[in-house]
Image 1: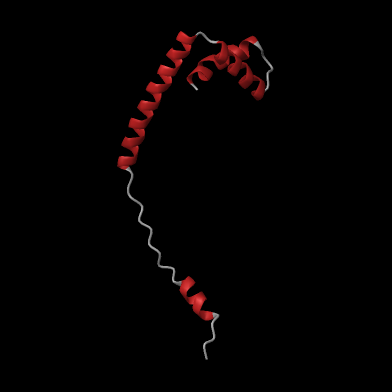
Image 2: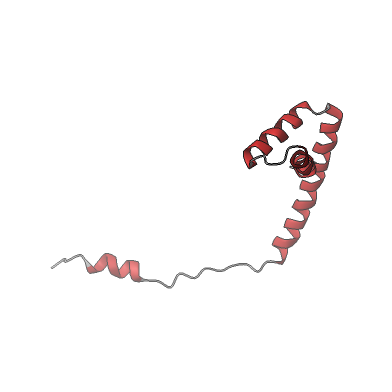
Length: 87
């Protein structure tokens, strides 16, 4: 994802008019051909971004108020008994 974000503008400037799918294929080809050291750097950036996201998500979830669902709808019980005739 980091690689795509940083490389997409280069692909578009070098080959204007590509469709979304063609841009994706070009990015995939570049990723496949990238130097292993450069690939490792992008993977490290992605790992750091994921760790940061998890911290932010944890903080966000801690501030959310719990949702309490109260089921006061007794219509299911009434409907089940309404159709039976036990006389």
